[in-house]
Length: 400
Image (cartoon, rainbow, N blue to C red):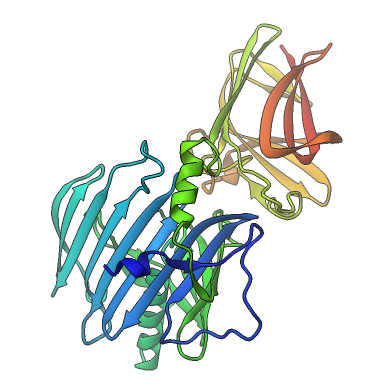
């Protein structure tokens, strides 16, 4: 890998990225992208296409800073024939994750994978369809090269006259060696495609030359936004981010897990949930949209348990375990008690809803950056308390 490419990344400010109005992307220059989550920059990437070879680097900050260099070669059909990655932690965070490397070679209907370091070293051989696309990282399209490759293959299929069915997409293959999986990606318009993300869609748009210009995860649970900007040399960025990690000042996990516990009138109460942060965004009616069932936090659905029977609102709730969902609608906020437990936050089954309780709103003197759940004791029993941004929501209960 050309070491100059490693640090050819993007200029940005704390609230996002800025480019000069005169700048327009050229297919001959590096493609540089910045990914933001609210006001936080979480990823920068740059890659260069020279003939059938693509070389690039992704610098990610979540949950800690890592640098992933990659190299891909395309065959005569524009499909990936080989792909390799090398992931390291900058030296400024000596306690960071150790290095890992992996390579994939695709010949015919076979993909040969070799992994070194990391959690799953070893070798795998996987049967794959024509045009399978390697991917790495989390479930979201953290590499814009991968997203652009998806766009190229889908758009090429359309140009060749193939009719795209609703369920048609692309096959993606992890370096873990798991079977290739269909992603419900599709062409939305000449300049727009979508990629599936847990049943929701990332949308990417390109210019008339097929260059990816940006990706939006606004309709997904990820909520990241990606923009292409003019490339710039900033060789100290990864080291600076890693130094913040080492000092305990990095971004860390975007929505860390938390537990609220209390014993009220002999009842042992617990809520396990995750804590998304405001990050400069509008919360009520924004990040938590109107009229949409919310997982009451992030990641997995909030899990509630009580050792004693309760009366929550005007409804009796037997001792046991439940999941808590909620719905915001133009200033009103309802808590939903669901009979299912241990489900991911996109797997709400309304048929398992037991009842709803309207929560009472009040203003917070000191706004809460992170969504926080707690219990408070009252003369009659207690309250479940939700704090986020400048609003507190409470639901009263008594112990039977």
